[in-house]
Image 1 (cartoon, helix red, strand yellow):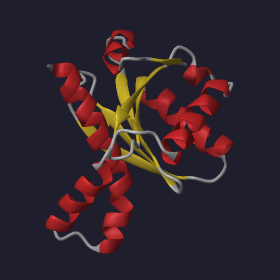
Image 2: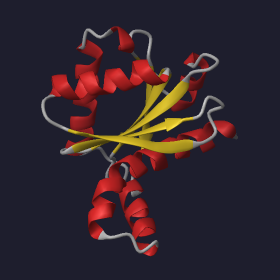
Image 3: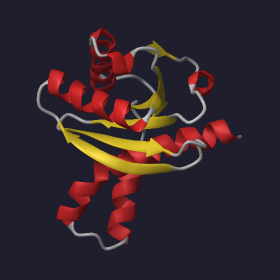
Image 4: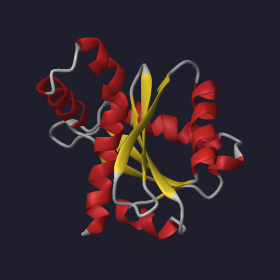
Length: 159
């Protein structure tokens, strides 16, 4: 796995027919979104209920293998002033652990961090405006936040 910095360089590592995976890493869940092969549209895909790192990584690697993922956009939960707090440290630690995981699905996979400030709040507001029940919002918010993050990156590389 390789970290792409600046994030725009991730695109050059994606082969034709591959897609991008967007991740919204939370303490209890991992929201997952997938792009289309043209790298224009992000769609909510799945939410992994977090247990232990090994099980979380296996579930993620299975999606990477099964769906033809060539790169990942990892939401980076910066503070509102742009500084890095404990949640950013936790996200970077998760990625470091993924780099150490011995799964062939991760070989050659490119990853970029993307500012996710206010993504969950924006999605929650949209769901409330759509009169979605509290239970249904809880079910949808993580994978929709991942789609929000991924779509932000896709829009960025389209310009």
